[in-house]
Image (cartoon, rainbow, N blue to C red; front, top):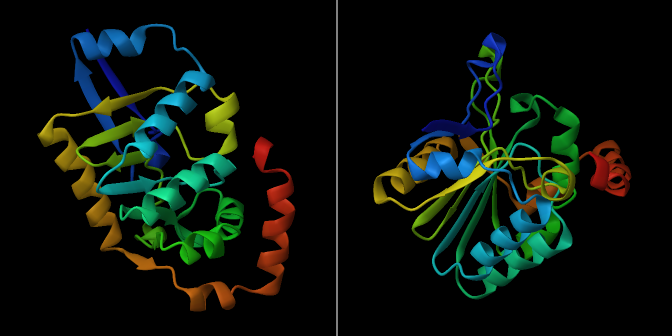
Length: 212
């Protein structure tokens, strides 16, 4: 059996988007095709991966509004010396710009704890959008359709795979590094320069984050 897992939309208009997927064969494909255990199993798997991180946690998520327990795990990981980075789309590199406003509401809290944040710039004038959903933790990588937001972790039916072969993990990590080379790092100054209307909208969106 063979299966393709990732966040790509089956749409010609989205071919220029920056996305990530994995083509798997054999037992891994068969596992993907079995009925999923749902959001509870996905949350438990993610929590275990984050809690056990030793060297790095590199997140790419186009829609970022994680539950508090995810924020805590990222902060705890940074406290124990893990290299924690989060790649998000800029306003112009997002297919849902208002989600970038919501993501900004988390900036200050994460920066204070030493988490590094990046906004992907890409080439939006050519139709490029950041749509990849990946997680590199130590020497493993998570690829699929799950965003770090409430809908993916609590409501949506998602499909993901954890990769452990060195070649596959290197490919996903290289994709993150390539995106970082085309991104700007978020600073405390950028937080302070966020327009008032954007801050206000961000706090309003936080009230509805479980359904966005």
